[in-house]
Picture 1 (cartoon, rainbow, N blue to C red):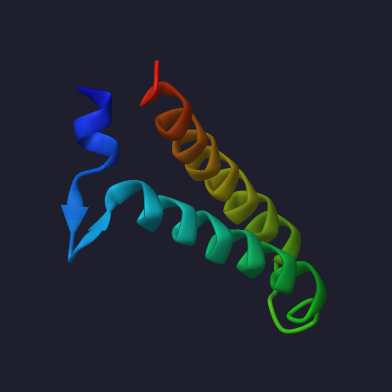
Picture 2: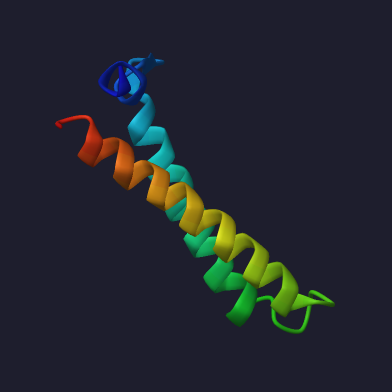
Length: 71
């Protein structure tokens, strides 16, 4: 069942690919908030921490779906 969810095609690509791309983009946003946008965002630490937690959760789901699809 998990294999069907992981490799469900969306626009010709599997769902797990989109999770990986979304995790990578969120990681890059978290890094840019703590460095590039440091003076431009009022509460940059809270925003950075929130986006980092969301990206870690998505990356864990992505990894677990990839590992558990073959068990």
